[in-house]
Length: 180
Image 1 (cartoon, rainbow, N blue to C red):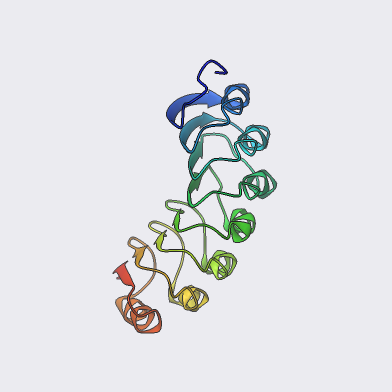
Image 2: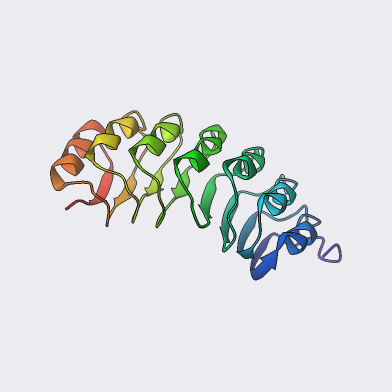
């Protein structure tokens, strides 16, 4: 990997922790999509990629909130799409430290209203995808202070159309989708 000194974008699959260690040797990476079977150890390796701006990490192995905290140390990260089996509200606590995020996709997992509290300080957030999560109307007020939000995806959640209308009124300029 060291022989790729100017590589700035990469999409790879079927990687494990050892494979992520090799990726960490490419300091020029700015955009990375990685899928495989990795754990907290692999996430710690990815945290060495200080130039990353966009990161998608989907693992068939479980990684913990502590593993996610490694990624919170990426200073330039603006777009983030994490996922693993058992992804919960606790995984979002480290996301609260990612103050430069403009795009966050946390779909198809066990996140609930409680997890939305962790997102309330992400003032730069523009696009937020919450599709197929366990959120309800009760959680939306945690997002009302995110006045920079444009696109918000509430599809296939327990959020009602009435709550989506209240959200739109509370966050003018937003374009929420979904509601049952």
